[in-house]
Image 1 (cartoon, rainbow over the protein chains, first blue to last red):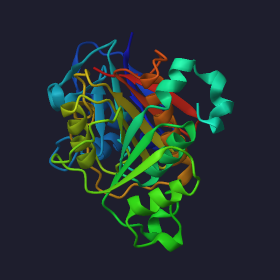
Image 2: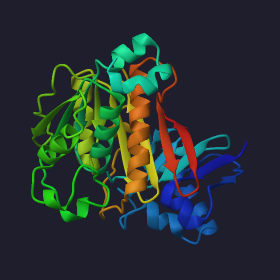
Image 3: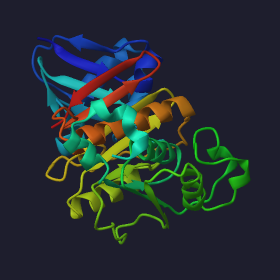
Image 4: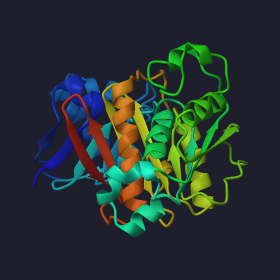
Length: 94
Length: 223
């Protein structure tokens, strides 16, 4: 099973896609995954997921198998085939 | 059973209906979500609703905050909301608390659940902490455009809101409008009732993502 990346909310609308999949040869970091996504989606995810200093944006949530990567190894968190990465901008309004 | 609840009689067992009419609810924030929650909870016949807010009604609230009209601009929200709800002369007690939620807030001793009616994550994390300290369930929702997320945090849950939404802060004021707000608040009420009335089918360690543009609801398993 491939590495699944799922998009929600405005990411899904902006990209007209609910996600993508990659077969990876060995585990990769989230930072490397963002580079792969950028190639497929024209730099969109660096813009949405990262600040200018390359830290994780406060306007984006990145989950690996349901866990926020801030509680793992942040952008160095590793993912492999069979993992699911969930990306969405949290809805803050009320 | 309150006589105006006859049409919902078959939905619940007698024990569930009795429990429903004993429920006391804290609504934290009487904006879009909070006013919609209050209207729904009053109609299903809970015992008491505490309304918490410290703000006054502004013109920009009127596109989605259903307890207010132009005549209320400048009034404390909780006062205007309580007056609006009380005009229906139903039996749910409405308690207005004109106070900003903080870590010093004294959560009423008799409540069964806290509803998130906030509009920013900083306040929500405070609310989540209050729920944890008071051993209470907490139902979160957040909205933007056609999208929303809902999460039920149980008293015994090790997975708190701050764990899932760590680092969240909005740089811009999110766009919000009434249809998404009303649908989302209604689902919050449904999820809370399913949990409190023991329907054994409610969100547990899951995030419900709602996409009303594509009519999709998806549960994301959390760890």
